[in-house]
Image (tube, rainbow, N blue to C red; front, side, top):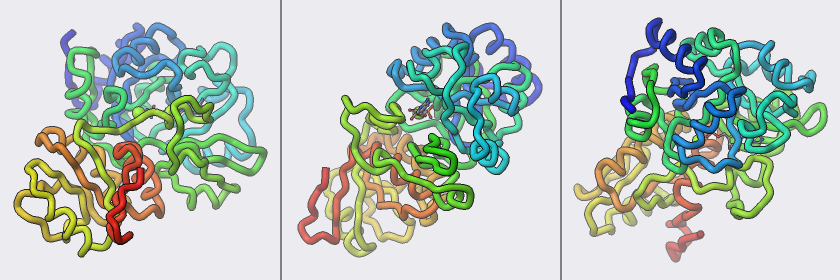
Length: 345
Ligand code: AMP
Ligand code: MG
């Protein structure tokens, strides 16, 4: 199959809408990462998404909507709190989990009785969903397990030959996937996956619990609320390690690496030997979110065998950065200030 790359605009809108209406799949831009879109109500289209990504069948998809009417078509259980959160964070990077109506296919939802729903903040994609008139299931448009795509070029690398169309809407604003929450009672949410809508922001509206799975390793057999979180994820071919330590200890450690093809993601102010390959990362949580996936992909392009990433600050969107990085690194943290350079696995 030939894969077309078209800039977001009227032509792309027509083509993408036609493809989605006829049961095909299309890569689309959002404010978080690029999505691989299909009609969420069309089981065959949804199966094509799982196939193109190589995604495990029990990892549910998020339904993207363009209006509250679409939410009422998916669920009967829109609580006062979920309405308030929708008013305040939609369109935006917040996914909420609701019991699904029987006509929402089980396949779309990984066999669960619930559906995850969000309204994305991207003009092109909102218009596209509106024009289709059905919710669009759209997981990240990468091969399952690889870092999520934050540009159309990343999508092309993974999906060339597998899908008919990629819509190029430029670089994604946030660079990490949406915050996923489920409801616990009338005034409490549990964060299953952190994102740009932070615990601090949600606390203005309700009680917030952060699920243990956000920062802890989940066994592959465990029964969990958010099945996607148990898979090894966001990983380049290079071996990723998290470096916890002061500037001085970090420089000493990384500069002691004598082999070639060692990658490094840091604040930018570290002094590195010429043999170490630096990739963009940054100091603020926002910069780190924007850069993390793109830099892990670049490290693979440069043929890095190992990539060392400095421990992010976990405030704000930093919790999402740390959550993704832990999975990229298979939970390997090298504690440089601990004395023995212990690797915690
Ligand atoms: P992705 O589409 O790749 O961004 O991943 C979607 C994430 O949302 C995964 O971590 C899923 O496990 C989670 N998710 C989707 N639907 C549900 C649901 N019904 N219940 C719990 N988690 C969900
Ligand atoms: Mg994904």
